[in-house]
Length: 501
Image 1 (cartoon, rainbow, N blue to C red):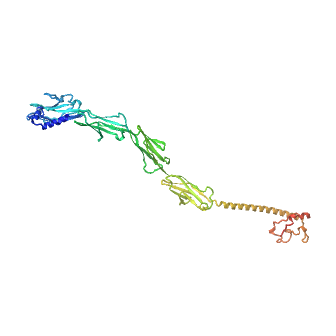
Image 2 (cartoon, helix red, strand yellow):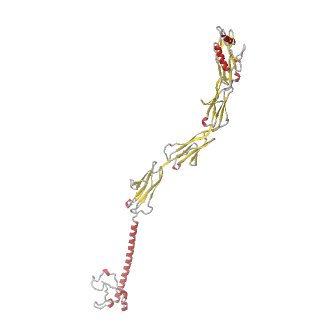
C-alpha cells in the first residue's frame, strides 16, 4: 500500500492546485525560489543481499555553488552522512555529481536497511534536504523447499513449497521448470513423479512492490534401467573368423554399474561391451544383456548371431550297401554341414576335369562296367566350397547268372570226373578179364568148335589184319567171366550179354 501511496503522492504533486503545491514546498519538495529534489520512485522493494540504485535529481537557485552532497536517513536540521556510518560506508556509493544528479547505490542490502532515505546538499549560501524522501523495504528472496529430503524415485509424490518474507505480503506465486510455466500457488504438487520431471524448478513471487524469482532447485528423479538394447558391431554378414562386438545400452538414473551377458540362459561375460574374437559357428545363438543399478535390473531383448561358414564334413553315401552288378541303378548322395545351406553340388569322376553331374543326389541307372571308377562331390555355398573323399563304384557282374553257370560247370565237372573214374575202372576190369581169358584159353584153330556157351562171343583182337582187329567204338566193352566148368560158364547174369565187334 505504501507504493500505491507513493504513486498517489507523485500524482498529487503533478495535479495539485497551487495552494497544495505551496504546502508541499513547505515540506521541502519544491521551493518558490528554485530549491528542490526529485526522486524517480518514492518506494523501493529490494531483496536481501541484492543491490539497489536510487535515482534522483536536484536543483538550486542560480548563483549558488554546491559545497557538499550526501545521503542520510535522518530528517533533522543537521543529519549525518551515511558514508560516514560504519554500517553503510563499505556498501554505499554516490553516483551523482555536484550539479544536478544525485543517484546513489547500496549493495549487499540487509533487512536493517529498511528505512526512509533523503538526499541533502549544501551550497555556499544555504542547505537543503529532499523531502519526503525514498522508502526502502527489504524482503527475503523466495525460497523453495522440497517435501522429500532424501532420494526421489520414480512413482513418488513430491511437494515444492515457495516461501517469502515480504512487506507487503506476496499475493501471487508462479512455478517454472527451466523457463516453462508449470503451475501456480505457493505449493506445487507432483504426484506419481516421472523421470521427465527431473530438472530445474524456481518460483516467482509477486506483490505490490514487484516480483521476485527464487533460486532454482533441482529435482533428480531416480529410475531403474529401461530401453535396454543390444547393438552388433557388424551390420552385415558375420563369417567364421570375424571379430564381433555386442554393446549393451540403456537409460537409467543413476547410471548402470553392472552389465552381464547371456547366451540363451548361460552367462558368458560382463561389461557393457562383449567381444568375440575369431568367431566360430558354435557362437551362433541368442544373446542378451542384463543391466543393474541401485533402483533395479532389466534384461534386453535377445539378438541373434548367425555365423556363416563354408561346407565341411562333406561325405558321399551309396544307395546300394552290397555288391553292384551290371544293370543296377545306383544313387550317390552328398551330405555336409554349412551355413547357409549348400546351394550347389557338383559331381566328379577322378581323372576327369569336367563334372559328371549336379544336385545333392547323383543317379546312375543301368550301371555298366565302363562307368566303374572313383567318384566324389564338391559342395558350395556363399562362403566357400569343400570336396568329399572319393568312393569307388565297381561292377561285379550278374551274380545269379554266374551262380547258375558256376553250378552247371561244377556239376558237369563232377559228372565228367565220375565217368572218367568209371571208365578207368572198366578198362582195368577189361584188361583183367582179357588176361584171364588168355590164361584159360590157349590158342586154337579157327575151325575148332567153341564151347557152346561162348559160341556167339568173339574175342576182339584175336588174329586177322590190324585194320580188322581194331574196333574203337567198342574197345571199352569187356566180357564178364573167367572160364571154368559148364556150371560156371552158364551163369544167368551174362546169358544176354552180346559183344559185337
